[in-house]
Image (cartoon, rainbow, N blue to C red; front, side):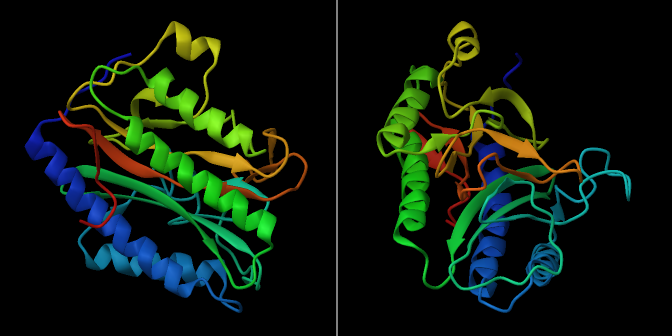
Length: 259
């Protein structure tokens, strides 16, 4: 595992990319209304980030050859879809939750963030799912500091979510990020033997994309025949939040909060 530490100047370049991602997500939140299609949101996101001089990280990933990779600009995952939902003609309805994941590159540096939008009259138990998952991300930021092991942070996140009755997804984890969207290390939201054996020391200059995903039922998931879309195994709702976070001398610096 080769973790590349970032300088202060490099972190500021990543913050600039993070501002673009934040701008995209804010516009997507505004558009998440009943009657709007996920494709319309995806197309607007493309317009927003290209107007800022950025390029998307998701379209055609991982090959970046047209027609060979992911077919959309964003991952838009509705209700029981956990991650990697593909924008299409699906119409958003009142009561839906819409996970939106955006990654861009600006001047050679990446930003990656996700949020889950609650549309209209969302059932209380689904609202709780979103609130718990978002709070997991806040807990991560509160507990990140130099000298800690990632397992200490992940244990706090997992314990909180499971005490609230949520299933913490095991099949997908966060990641290092920099000039490439996916760098070392893998950043799980749970503790397992692999993490204990290969724990991550949080040091100043480490930059990671932390992205908790929680399901209202089982943590188990399955991939649909399109090879991308991942849904909950029991078809219950799922929520996803993400920030790109730098480890500083004082703790955590969120690079995708729009500052």
